[in-house]
Length: 173
Image (cartoon, rainbow, N blue to C red; front, side, top):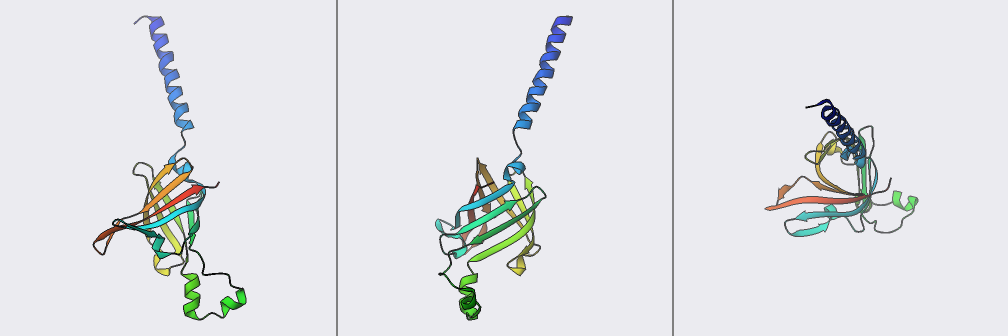
């Protein structure tokens, strides 16, 4: 190989490497794309071929999901409330009636990790509205299409059917 060919090839390899490096830098990681605030657009429970509102909540179901760069996340979801009620009236409800209102709400916060290769988000629950969830580990398969995030809970067998939940989120910020 003469000197001119060597120099031209070397410059091409260096430039090509720089271009690949720039392309890699321009393509944000899944983790960086997940960071931010998301609003719920769909929440369903799927059992075999049946699809129902998420965990029996009343529709419409609303929610907010946040992933922070610090590795913390929180999720809050709420089914439709049975109506409007004042604070003083709420405090006078019987335990059964208060449960009717409160059962529509769900929340937890956790540390999270993302496996970009398998597209799994792991939530290590620090605390939850449900005390038995403290310390539990949830794994969610995810798909990210632009500003739409779809999370699927791990499938489980229930009444001889495979069941899972699908929650679809739209990015706000």
